[in-house]
Image 1: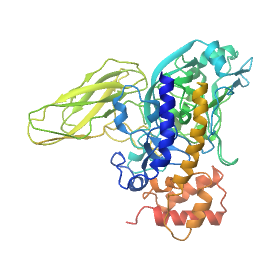
Image 2 (image 1 turned 90 degrees about the horizontal axis):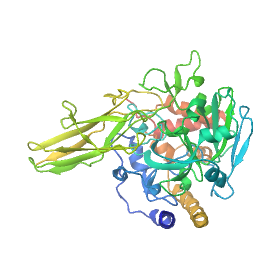
Image 3 (image 1 turned 180 degrees about the vertical axis):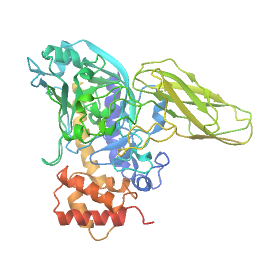
Image 4 (image 1 turned 90 degrees about the vertical axis):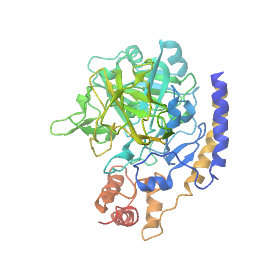
Length: 407
Length: 98
């Protein structure tokens, strides 16, 4: 049933794409405030094949973010899940029937080649709900602005991922004790041979975590092409740079991997952010940066700006998420951050997923009320009050204001 | 699943054609260096990358970006072309003076 529906939606999306090019002038693109001026002039609502219209930031490689309205659903639907590529050499079609995943490297005893059928039948199937969030989510809100894809708030989504544990796959290949990193590659590639291919590594301990999975399904359907079909890596709690799409190669190595996307990109200043997980084998004496790892604790108010009569209540709601330590509380301010009250939390669906919160607010008298949400987790982490600036614009978890206007 | 895949193939081909057509609608300012930018930069990416990254980079900022594209990503530009691109971007998509 789900499969049929996704096929129909996929076709609808594909057929809609050419029509959307003739979009009416001035069609509202749901961008947040504070982005670079040029983004408001060029971002557009556009549909990739198999997707509903998303906020297009760049056509090639495709970078499309999810409008906030979709985060009201507990699981972000596959056909509105954000799309992020670094390099434009994307396989035109990924055929699940002929797809192969190679498990190799100097630190495995028995190199393997797996098909989708092998993955499904040869390993215990597991399922986990987890937030997939681009490291650069909210980069466009950096102050001052920093170069890169100017993401607003929607380079993220929450889905149920089904697949096989990477640790089970590595065990079958006979992982040796001297493996320190696991290198992952996808089928996508640069346009030019001179461009470094998008290759990433994980510390062996994180690759062997029971929650790190090789996923062949998303929300009960095959992965959308633009989200990594037929198989992608899922690293719950860590940013999406490690969630390799179109996964074709896993290599266990005894030395730190020294590709551009580890040594130079996706790094944060050491000691500036309150993260627990460190990727120590990618640190070096005298180098002041370390690879980005965990998703920092964050939240959003999902209610759009609201108008209400003074003395009557408004129902505010939103989401909070973190690296999997678990949301302990969400506090709401209706006066721009002076006073804070606790919101009610819905039941936790997954410690790696979106946690819904709700708060009833009755504006006492006419006026504008600035609503802020601030989440804290069981590791004692709380959202930052002020931006922690860094050159790549990562880890922006400053509360975002929303308005209630009472008359 | 097989059915889904079969149906997805024409959808993808259609989509790629649509993306190229969409991309052709992006226009950059007509000024010295414009042609070089279109020729060199669009080998690897659509030109909306430039528009969303504006206007906040200084001339040094654009030089650093263009330098990264050439040295790290292997963009096919001579030093003269790289200079022409940086100058064009700084003048037309750079941080306004003052």
